[in-house]
Image 1 (cartoon, rainbow, N blue to C red):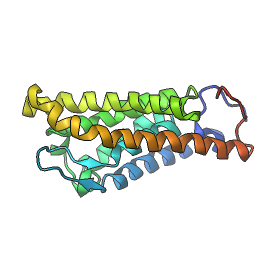
Image 2 (image 1 turned 180 degrees about the vertical axis):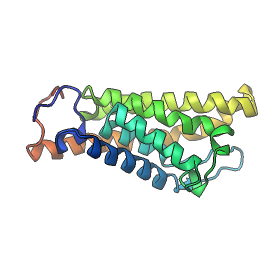
Image 3 (image 1 turned 135 degrees about the vertical axis):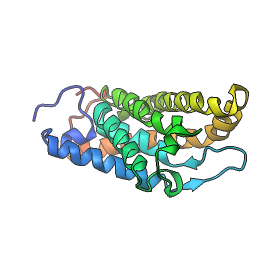
Image 4 (image 1 turned 90 degrees about the vertical axis):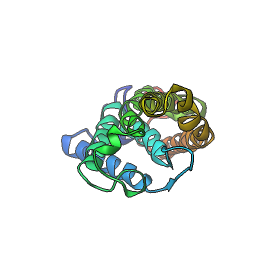
Length: 201
């Protein structure tokens, strides 16, 4: 199997086919919905603490930019049409239009950004993987804070939508940045991917 420099972890499972890619996209949406159920509500903000950003980071790196973005878009459709996939089992279009909707919509570009870095080998080394995840996190917060500020004002948006979540997101970045290089080592030891210090493929 010939693999280009843009191969990600799932590309070593076999030749790309639309059925396999569709399954991966659906699986990515379901994993995101599952991690959304791990929710902590804070009394001073409408934005909950969830494991969804971890899903965005890992799925972005594993699936690559396009498939990850499609998985997140499908996740939003699933939650919007009534499946209990949003934080804490919530559903419905109101969640996309409300104060936290920017974070949900931000899953799509954030996963694309992480996938873009992964397609260039950044997910093979902890430090570069962390940088890729931080880039995705920055996109996610930018989208979330933009919409949140429309409801609470710019002067309150950072206190309600950024500062309480920085430590948790850094922890999620660290987990994802440690997990992905480890997965690559397993793939390399299994003989499915070429070894190389640079991460080039």
